[in-house]
Length: 288
Image (cartoon, rainbow, N blue to C red; front, top):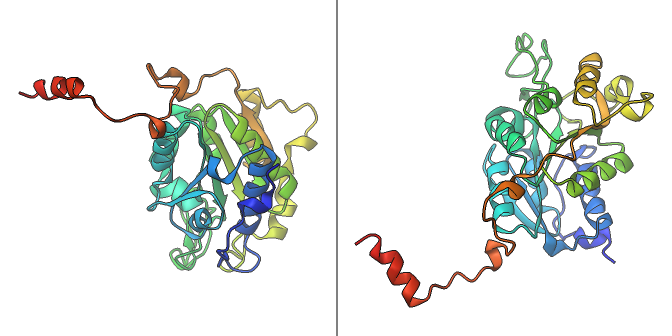
């Protein structure tokens, strides 16, 4: 039986001590083991930013993509090898700024991958600038007088775009985060998991203590129903998006792969790509 230790490698993370991303890494490793994966069954694709380094810290297939482009790469990997469990990862700048267009279309496409966003409400790798998740009035090097922009609301956005699995967690709650990643992996469709992962170096507002004071667990809301999109949206609006747990799940809608006409059960990665002479000549004749 696979254990989370098998998803460890010899690369030591260079995140700042206390960074929430350490817990996200541990949760991914535990979730992968808990659902019975082997390292060769898992591919992790990341973007740029502190969180983008995570693909190199886990013993699995890993791809460190360019800024905002983890999702198109991850979707390509999944389409080429449907047998792989594919996780995309990145930060709030990667997913909700330069990569927002890819995020929206991956959500509506409902391809069977899991996207984990490490949300720290700031640009950490570039030394502390305002991100699309920073609140109005947030002061950083790029907004010394306070941001005049409204923060993106990713969970509400995901519901509006037609997401079939929407969840949110806090990096200190390893048990809850692990369970949500497990559920996201098992979900047949696109799973979006936003994780509040405090930046201890540059964000002195959205700290661990701040989140502990302001977050509401959905499990504490009596009668909460994650199968109701309307209830999910109302709950997010009522709590200004500061909730943790499974927000919404639609188990009825088919995934992208299930709808692709002629999508082979044999992954492209394992297909015989050799052409016999007759087939080759037929293809050539089309261009003559």
